[in-house]
Image: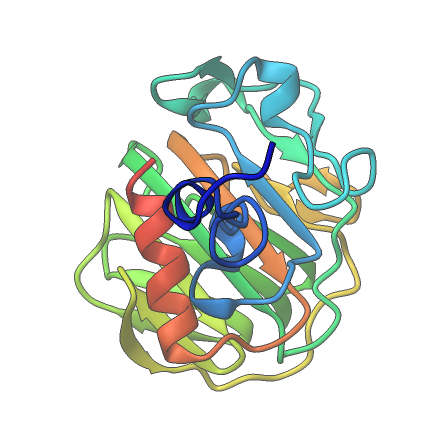
Length: 229
């Protein structure tokens, strides 16, 4: 039986022709492209799930070091520098134009710790430090930028030569050659082993590596999603 016009309007299909699109992944906030690797440690379903690269699971997953952090869904990966804990990855930051962004909390203890990083030698390194001997946060993209004060919790980002602290421009990094070594988390990789004196005490909440330079609005948007974890 045919429905009259009023009834036809009630049963009309929703505008757009279907269900609403799924929300963007946190690492795509602000229109950011897919990263090479993205890890969300806080809020993961398990420690094993926390180490999975969310962009392409099974590729560039994080792996336990010889000693590895404790994990809690409420805080993420908790590293203890006195226990020499770290995670390894096979992610190599191949150019100065890459973007790395990390959310962390409760940094303490070792004031020379690396949040993540890699090194070929003293002059060829790529890492973040929350303290740099108490002088301030450091952003090393080949060469280094140190900006006071230290930061014990929040977000650090290198987007090409631009440093960002909690989504705000923190200065320009004097870039130079980047290492061919893969990134470690909670310490700095040097020749396939964590470098002595770089182990972190603190919680790593989330981390992403992009092979492009994110814009300032994209950095701010991704930072905001990470800070909400």
